[in-house]
Length: 342
Image (cartoon, rainbow, N blue to C red; front, side):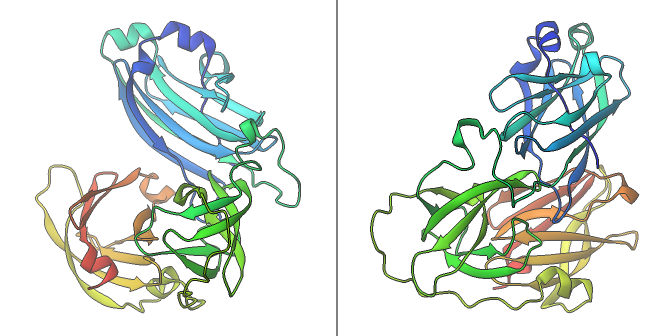
């Protein structure tokens, strides 16, 4: 199991300006994983803040290595209290988490180094043991998991949402529901670094399963609703599995770049498409290896970053109908037509 960062009173007092600048990113583990590695850099007074969801009582390990002795990490609980101070613990934390919710891991430079405009490159390791879903939620901060509304509304997707058999993007699809459909809230848990909610459909056929919490919002539903026309349940084999064996729905080429400063080239790709905006794009990089890009519910989910290539950061932005995806120094421009067809 790997580790997670820390926030401290002493560090906050030493670098009060650090929290005023910087970036915030959410950390989600790969399907079925309990850990993640993040690389990055901070300069001057800027901070890097990472959000990761966990339950009270879960065992966590967090560590950071950096090339600057003035680089530190701190861990803050959902209620704002300091869990660990990297300046006092050699940038390491290991132990049970005190409550459920989103934890903040902040990476920053000590004030004197920040004033000099120094830079700290770092590698952050975060690991949170899987929660035992047969046991009740412990220390649920502000009833964020077991409280909440009676009903959720599906949002954050363009058409349909996959309901999973377990709280994981790698779990089998139990069924699909449409955007704006109301679902009964059966309670939420933390898994793979994010909130998952167990839900039940209100119309027929009725089924239950798990949906990512960031795709749901509180619903004003207060009565019976007509049973929506159910989307067809997808086949058992996922898009990722079909892409892995080369069973592509389409092939082509997209603009790409492997290293910063290079001219954009064309990279061949193959794509396997599933239901509800699920797709896996396999791109042939200029030097001959491949990069897998995963999409879920119509949005970019992750890339196949691994220890072999140093666990590079990945992210995506939208430019019109184009996904602009970065994986470390790599850059891919994938139009909707390439990913989802049409």
